[in-house]
Length: 113
Picture 1 (cartoon, one colour):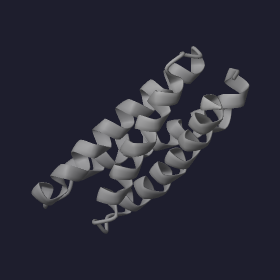
Picture 2: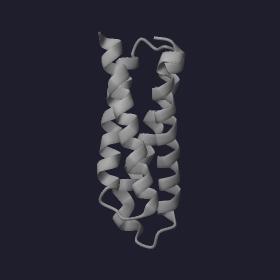
Picture 3: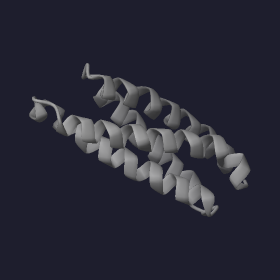
């Protein structure tokens, strides 16, 4: 696959990375920081794997299928954890993470075939 074929997934991962980074920083400003601890940890994990997935797709890594599967798994875990919270930044994170997870699965399945 070429970078152009990956573009929708790259865009979804970029959106997820940005939403997770924003959610992480916003969580630091909340009063009940302890209740957001797991969400913040997963925000960081998700942002990092999305960034790495973007890099893997851009350089057409031979490991892109596995990286995208892991990215989808972490994005889903982040979305699941964020759904436990009512903050706006968590809600935005849920949508972006689920979109990225779906895009990663589609590309991962296409690359494996």
